[in-house]
Length: 492
Image (cartoon, rainbow, N blue to C red; front, side, top):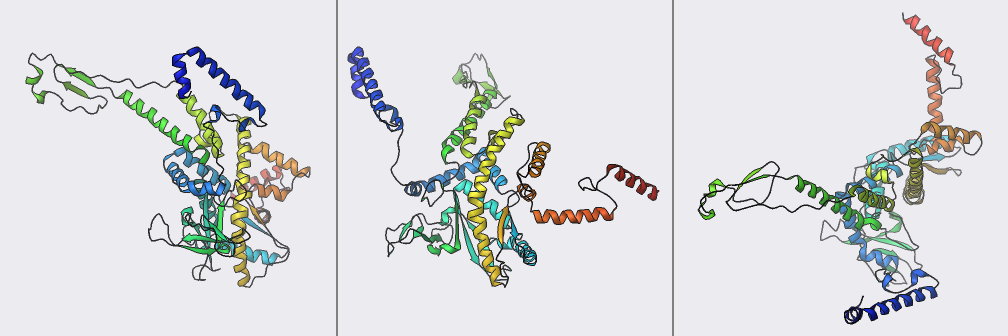
């Protein structure tokens, strides 16, 4: 209601009501004329504001604020912290492992050794904290919290690393967001620290030589794109910076945490009941001895006894009682879980209201989110480029890559909700020809070649011991019992 409506309402309520009715009819008529109701204008849409700026312009202005607030939530909101860890643990787990597919078995075995020496060693990390699988998880956590991270290829000496290659994972503030230039010569330009040529291809990243949040003397310098992996999840075409995963629900998380804290404080105040004694002293309050009374009551502790001056009293404000607190908080935590791409149970650890079917449905949908992050982000944008860098070093070392070589990656297996049913389903799919044994093995986070090798080794080991294990097709329960009985007799 604007000022004219308010004045008219005071002078003539009837005319004001008629005016409001006519305005509502006009708004409805205007909405009906449009092809899209969402494009209508009027009071209903006053708070529904859009922005004609490009996605890169919006991110450029708000990136630092979003990152700082997301980091605050990660440090102070146990729910957001748990969601970040749940995503990283499921996307990367114990590591996304490569498989070297080629008929050249000799090269494959050499490559496995080179990979283990490089990847399963903290010498692959420029900062010396993680092996390659640890760097995968660090990168995934950073993307969830800050929206992006930078991985820099560092060419080092063979004393530092046998292949002369190390990876350095940098926080997004290393990218100079203030570096903008409309024309770098020849039609190129720089936007938010990313430099493009005249064809709109990225050619350089302007990175600080040290963290600018730690040093006021940090200087940004251009680094060729061939040395950079910029890891982020792009939501729109042309987007060149990432935003934190908490962006859609950032305010809701903060409000919910504040609300929960206020409820807790209210309960603590309600529990702080002390005892207050007021004496009927015949002498006046002015003549009373201060040593006989508590003259400084600024806080109340449970179980305390306070003596007041004659004529003094204490009154308490009753903290409001929030009815339906549990259902209210649960509803909003479900909204938060949806915005973060996890289930409510994973966000809160509350599994009290799920059965097998409902949990399985939620788990499957969460699995789709995990597959999206694996196969659309981590593997193509991080794992593959790193392996390409590694192959360059392998070739320099004299190991020529076979022409039939194909690289594949095996993520960790998804935890089974009901192993008996799911394994039986896999067996039926393989028998019916709807899936292959090798693919089922990879879906369980294992490498087929390694499983075959270990299986052959185990069969030989059990054969030498005179035991036929149940997983062996030669297994005979009666013969197994007889073999055990014979061994006991021999020992006796």
